[in-house]
Image 1: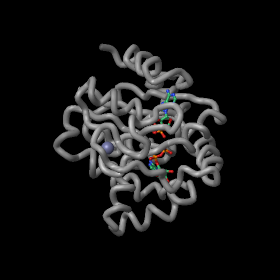
Image 2: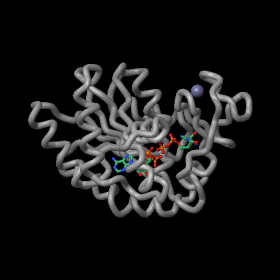
Image 3: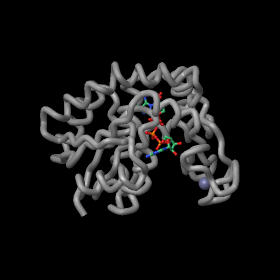
Length: 215
Ligand code: ADP
Ligand code: ADP
Ligand code: ZN
């Protein structure tokens, strides 16, 4: 049983590390951002409601997020644990999530906070490219695909997320500082927080995360 939360600003490398963590520990990767993007792609009502906030770099309203996150966590594949990426993102979400866990006599093992300076975050976000088919993430300079515009994993088309632009990135970072950063205190108080320096290369960051979770 292993329940983990990845915290950190947009562009810190949560998705990149999540792919490696879930492979090593055999738990599902639950990204609320991915759930919203899938709904937008499929044209659902949930996608339509989330999109207006996402395009502006604002957070989707708490009640909507909590509902979809909890529904996902009740699915069969989550019964032996999971890695949460991008949820919770407000103190209210964290409190509601703790109530959800308590009702099931469950607990979070570790909250891993990946920290990266704002200037580097901007470069990472603006250069990010994502596979339309499998969601794998690349960077035009730091982690280019073997063939430009094409996913190494599945051959799918790479695209730039609507919210990965110079216009929205500053807003996303300030939204993070105002609404999500206070969560580090919330989890630190209950002894669950571990901080990781996200400035190094992906191997170094992953090694630091493994040393926190344990082999
Ligand atoms: P998040 O999920 O936190 O928003 P991602 O994992 O998508 O972040 O990473 C953001 C961008 O930065 C991606 O383009 C990714 O390829 C790149 N990236 C991730 N980790 C590193 C790293 N350690 N060093 C340099 N670039 C990175
Ligand atoms: P990032 O690379 O910024 O970490 P995500 O893919 O996690 O991106 O999230 C993209 C967008 O989806 C966010 O900017 C926000 O609008 C919305 N979103 C995702 N998770 C949440 C959440 N837990 N609470 C509110 N909004 C969320
Ligand atoms: Zn792909």
